Length: 406
Image (cartoon, rainbow, N blue to C red):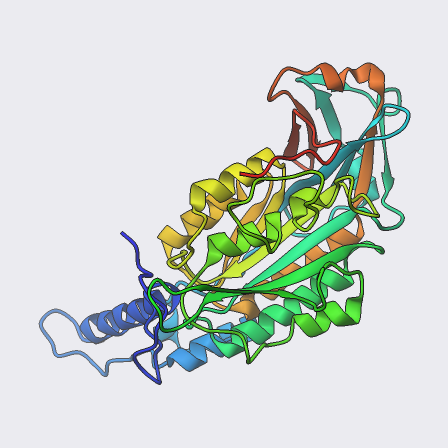
């Protein structure tokens, strides 16, 4: 069952999208009904006392913050939107081999208590190659990522009609926090996505910034400006998969196959031979409030396959509370990334801040050639475990920018 069939608005008070907005409204109605049916305080056949109802409006839900929750009326406690998510895990953002034949893995993470991992945590890591433990410092070592030219990052924002302006502004602020925490010398681009209103099938409306082309930049003020609410962006239905494809493969014909002699605009190619600064680590961050209902070129299986083949980490940020949609984001995140859901971007802040700080503490694990990592069988892995959390870099390692397109 799909809850989000369209993003169009039918009310000035409650925008009915069958994704997050409708599910919030439906849950609110259920709370009101429960309060009306069971709110009496009288006993056995009595008429009971006054009925207490939750009177939060949709606008109040959209602007609610974690600080507001303790003061909410008791009748609103049944609305299950008020938990604060966290992004936890060990994240391997990329691999490469150096001139000495060592394998380098670029890693950051957030511990189970929600605090960012630091060098001291990674120095205590358990590392194995093909299931066989390897020992520090004889077989591997770890150091901070001191400077840039390491990371390429695409930041995506859902501009479908069911997203509120406050969430879009809030997401821009959260992406600014991520940019502030990223190791020096990174490059990034931002992508706003929706579809154009009117024609059927509606053309995709995917805007890549900052201008001018080729978009990728290390200019922090330009990226922060690109994260601001864009009042000129088309607002209609959700084009999640085509937008993720644009981030991964670049703003070209999405049906085009990878050409190593000409293509360098997607995340999957930023460590390729055409990029001036070869960047082995890649990260895709995506905020959306519902399932895709308007992409024309790519589907869920296409994106999952490309993320898997190119070993790209996706952090999926849901501003909704629909179980069906949450399952889709978890599939997109896979085992390399993470997916979290929240009532609105105010509730995402508590997850984004430590995650951004973890990026600023990114490290590089170096495995020596005698660990035989290059002779692992297909789908063999290098495993890194920290604080009871683990991540795997799976062969074939993406060591030369040769990831193939769909």
